[in-house]
Amino acid sequence: MFTGIIEEVGSITKIETSGGNIDYTIKANLAEELKVDQSVAHNGVCLTVVDIENDTYKVTAIDETLNKTNLKHLKEGHLINLERGMKMNAHLDGHIVQGHVDQVAICQRAETKDGSWEFTFSYDPELMNVTIEKGSITINGVSLTVVNSKLNEFSVAIIPYTYENTTFKTLKKGDVVNLEFDVIGKYVKRLMELKSQ
Image (cartoon, rainbow, N blue to C red; front, top):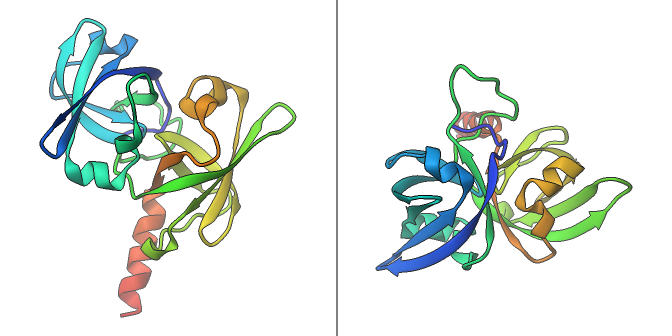
């Protein structure tokens, strides 16, 4: 369980393929505080730490994860949003995030506003995921509020702190991002589907 509040932006130092899996070695200050078998969200994808060496650690993404997320698009040198699991006795500053990506989206616009940024994303409507204005959405692991919701498109406003301390500072039109829709909304949607059967 996560909150969508990014702790650190790490950098990918090595990518190795092993069958259908990909091992990512990530350099981050928090590496020295991790332990093997710990869960860490990487661009919103919950992965297990399998090895640690000084200020780097390794995680493995299996084929199922690679097919549903943007991890397969990452290259050595790319930046990645990192968050360790939520402590149950801590403040929930973002919203409830599971680390399970629902689908990917494409950045359609990245606009500079007066002191902020607005990013617009589109996603495949066939999976029937929805956003609502003022509702929560997780983009590459970042907990955000929807400011403009359409059928398969939505926008978010980014404050300077979030822009500078996440990978939003490198995000541009055409980039693929991970989406995790609000868990409460997903349960409501599923209950409505069952009711209509």
